[in-house]
Length: 439
Image (cartoon, rainbow, N blue to C red; front, side, top):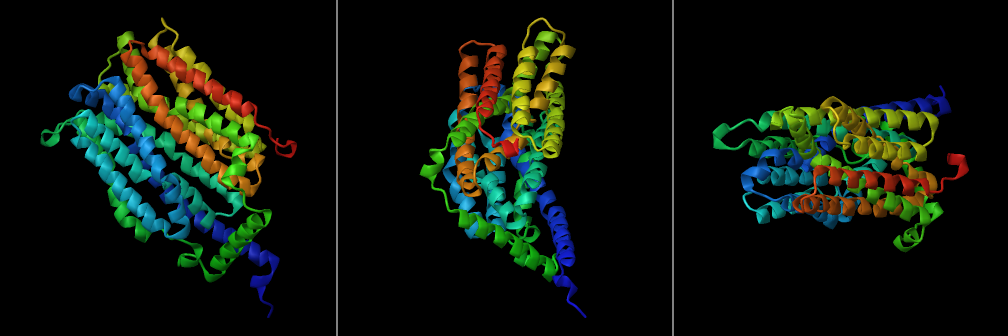
């Protein structure tokens, strides 16, 4: 009898089976982890509706606290990715989850600006390495042709965590259990899942295909050989140094694009609830925290549709740059329209929903652009540089808004600044040269 497992058709079937099992086993867990990660990163924007008044924090204090998360994050971002590559993803991710969950819960104890700054910095330090570590982890499990789609699935967690977090936070802000304030319960309840999942993660996650008992021996062998062949092909092209990456025009354009767009995006995430509160007050529609977060959650939910549609459309057409520009320009235009005075609340809310849609539309196609415009070896180094610029943007945006507000400028001024940043990001993406074969 011939060994059918060695025939091309049999190997293709083994490959399809392995890829299918990996997708169903790995992606749901990483998606859940990213939902929790982004919620714990952003829930300070929801808690702010009550926390700021109770603790008498200025807008500048809040902005600096938000920024310090990203400073802490940058300190261990690259070491964290290296630990995933050379040590153990499940152990490192478990450490990250437990520590960032504990730091998030510790935010409930904050009483002074200094404590707020320290807590946010430590939370960033604790979460550092998670996103780049996941990128590295994907290279251990997904062949190159599957990685972009896998990333799209995980990025669905951003708008979903914000929409879910707004709704859950709206309920928690009204609670006074055990004489604790509602904003304290936001941090305690929403930080706890990270700790619990971190404790369980070593038994839920598998480091490498060779360790996966849920794959057959043939599937493990196929996946390991496929990934090893890709690694050898990348090595044959030659490594690219950081200095070489920094001399590449497209790297700087993409870094500047992410810098500008992330300034806008992070301000939108952390300050949207505050802006909605102000708009509802002007409209006389009731600006209590529950009402504010219910409206805010709908805006974020529209972002979920944006992520889905941009991923589906850009994969279907193979076009990435104009999809990215569409999201950036759309967010700029509709946010500007939302800030036009004298409109009814229904119209303002419609513009905000469209802003939420486009504000999440751009980033799935954006992260494909480095792989389209650079060689595989150059893309690996360049993505780290580009992502670092995105984190610097996160550290700068919120203090700028806090300073503007404390200087007496209305929400309209800060949101128009956000619109300008979205538009600037589109200009930089438009200058990126994409080979014609990839257009």
